[in-house]
Image (cartoon, rainbow, N blue to C red):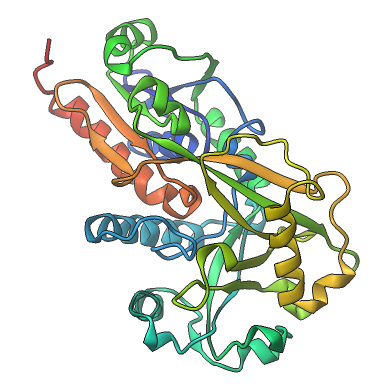
Length: 373
């Protein structure tokens, strides 16, 4: 990516999480100068404690299943997969392409959504294998009565390394970073912001902050994961992701996620709750979290040899959820583009949404609309 020139159009990006940084990267690819405004900066952003496992929509523990939402998220997810697969020296950037096993307690074809998801993955995702014996091969406890399974390759992202790479890349290419808390409605502040920062377009990547500046109807989903510390050479089952999908037998809160994070940790998840906002939970003091941990440990007995990480045992964060769909669109009448509301699948959609937001920003500059007063 070449460095932008002084005569290039200028974009102001609000937010420096996965959406804000990836959008900045894509805007720079389109030739924009970029300034990022953020109240928090890596590593102190919600994206740092995200699950960061690439998934094909709908996510296994997902909340969106309407047709319009799925059409768009599938497109964004596929673009993101392509970006992750073609990233130079991916492990140095925190991206690990690993097998992901998805298990079922009933035949996949008996659950319409799971069957459709498997067909999509077989069509679009590398490394697909449909094999009911995967559970036995990888040491899943027989007590979970797994009867079907498939495997595919999936990017599994070490968030601290990856976000640091993204931030370093956009700064090296000339982006300016300003620490600032935005208060008030964006529609009221956008003209002043553009004048102060000499920007032709604003891209709103505020995540949960969109509640304050744009859309009060959004809400948070609290996500929590347990981190296990690997010691020495990890076994084969710990170099692969494992997921017990929910269906008419297994509920969402009874699902299981187990996957390696980098080379030193295995992550157990995931607890997803609508409403609670406390991120100071303790594993031994919160029964739903303890139940999740015990369920994952029972599912894959080989985990018993791995201790909970004494330095950072839990990763807990609030994900910004927008009930109708992720918002990636141009604001009617204002030089503002939105990219927020990704829920718990921000990394899976990151590149697809960012590319589309950058295309909208380019259109704003090339074909500005009449401003609504």
